[in-house]
Amino acid sequence: MHLQSWSLLATTLACLTTGTSAAGLAFNGANAPSQVLLLDDSWEKTADGSITTKKGELIVMGNITEYFLTWASSALATTSYGFTMDGHGINPFRDTGSITGTANVNGATWDSLQTGIRETQGDHQLKVWVANPAGVAFTAFKFMSSKGDTVFPSIYGRQATAVPSDALTIDSGSPFINFSPERWKQISDCAFCDQRTLANSSTIGSWVQFTISGKSNPAFWVYGVKAERHSLANLRVTGYKGGSMAYDSMQDVVVGGFDNGEGSEGLVYQARLASHERLNEADYYTINMTLNKGALGIDFIRTTTEFITPNAASTTATPIGSPSSQNERISILPILLPTLLGVGLVVLLVTGWCVWGSRFSAAAKKKRAQAHVGTSGMTQVRHSTSSSTVASSPLDEKQKLPEERSNV
Image 1: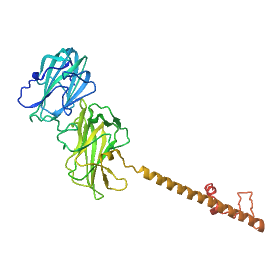
Image 2: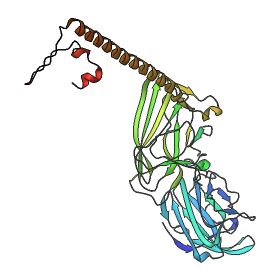
Image 3: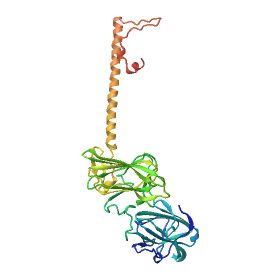
Image 4: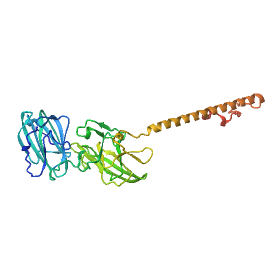
């Protein structure tokens, strides 16, 4: 990651000369569209439209070919900073150098610096971190695209243009997402995550699973945070129709680092981890992601159909009926627990009855045998002084109580 002592942000949009006639998107820090600019909690907005911090991070997501950022500080030369593009550390001055000037921030005149970065056409995520005890400001942004003014992200974020705008979305905390019990951490303060929530695990074998309807051109997209270390998960998609498996596919997907097996130099947020856009119609599809290497972070999931909850009593599925039903989980525990307790009680009673009956029967027979000995005098017990023999008793081997048989 490129680090250097400098400082950040300010100046006016008039300073943003790009050398290209293509249309783009220009804004200051205060009026930036939420699907393009993400800020952590350290930033403050000023009356003149700047955003300021003493130590903070920001992310720009979009289908962008050129980035122009103006930053300023009263102590520009002592500002520390770092830039990553799609997880790669970059030099923010590598393509256009820098344009120096001054900017008015909260009534004060600060030194300003404009940087320019060029990339190939496509979705990119630029992450910037800056630090200066004297404060750093970003006041102007301008982004260009070879597609004209279409700079909004196509694959990053909840509003990615590649996903149908009417697709349903569930957050990582939804009851329609099932997580394995192995060490998933539910995070509620992820500044760059959708709804600020994230489910994260680094335990190999941990899994996440959800089910969607198989009607009306089913498709799904799983979004999360790409870890810095190279990470892999097994994606399994299983479709059911008429109570039988009709489709089954498995593949490994990269959920951290790069496709070439190397790690990255920064996290990538609200990134597409897995998707399937051409599923055949079925009753429903179950999607499972199991971590094989590294770490897995789940942010949100989208589908063109509807999320459903499998019925515990059959192989069919129950569609989500209304928004309120999203807070319900189907559980077989309330059904099984009373049943198991009832069966256990019956077994206990039957066992007790049998033991009592056996003891009672054996005792009765013993009394009859003793009575017989007393009246007839025909049964004798003879002792031998050698290895000796004990004469057979009327209570033979088969008539002994269970605890006596066990000691023989």
